[in-house]
Image (cartoon, rainbow, N blue to C red; front, side, top):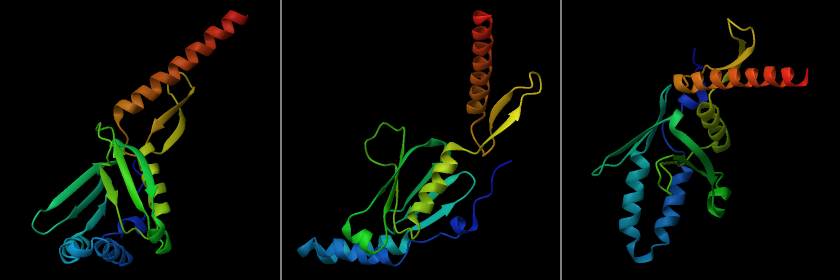
Length: 177
């Protein structure tokens, strides 16, 4: 049973308009290349789309060079919020998502999120999975179970770790008795 995605997350499809102001200032900093840079960033802003579903995060943008990135929640290794002075002034931040791909650069950067801290917390909860405590049928001991669409291998390894912990506790009790 997976936890449904909150409606305020699924409602996010486009970046907020304040991102266009940041793009304008970024293009302005290129001085002579302003028209070209602004055109590229303008089309990036107007074609950028997000989709959050049970599997992961989807991001697409571009007109001539169409790019689409799909990132499963289970592959996420690290999430960072980054914001320079202008972004903080406009209430924005970039959410950089990294995987274990071996690259130093982020795999996906979400820009133009109004509630970047809430989005970070949502991604962390999906990345880690929701864990419940329940009793194993044979032993009656508590076992952690991944219930948020997590990897079955991870759930099996968690159960093995709980069993090994129980064996260690029994051995320690016998050693002290």
